[in-house]
Image (cartoon, rainbow, N blue to C red):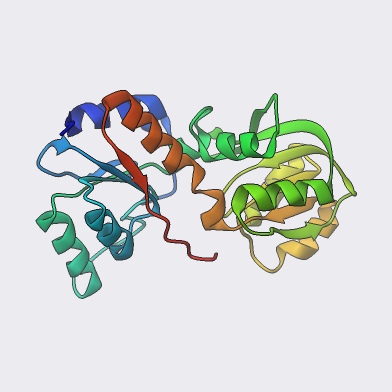
Length: 253
């Protein structure tokens, strides 16, 4: 059975994703969050680290789970009830967890934004959406109707996106930031795009999109962030000659 040393794989990921260079939201804890006995024979990838995805990873025979949303986003104690069960499953089944949030969003080849842009056929992308001291999104100059962009998004994401039609019928400058960036659409408008693609946003952003003259597409937080973990796991599997699997556990959000 092919086998890889966990520290070697983690060092490669940290360098590839430039983990140490990124500021992130408090509690994101990018990098290795849980270690195992030190070897990796099968990789599982999921958007979220939860008891449900941990159990799916164990059932798949994985000893490394790669996620976009990790285990720690604030105080995570006490470890009782489902949290105790999560800890037990990780330790008893020798499952390591590696998490990458903004570093994986922003990666120019493997990132959520890069892969979604590629799936939409958006070319000659440039850095976009300055947040936490760096650009985390991408933008592209093109000419697409809102109808055509809706069709492309539906194909890429597997579901019809929600459109806030605050701008014109033709999309000429499109910005992409996967996940939950709807509440920060003023940043997108301030950087000059007329169309903004993200995952989700609050109710009040509909009126804001109209005020800003901005088309906004909400494709789903989960759906827009499946791309990066798949790409990273596929890259690691090819480099280190270990198998990988994607664990689909959609939230519908």
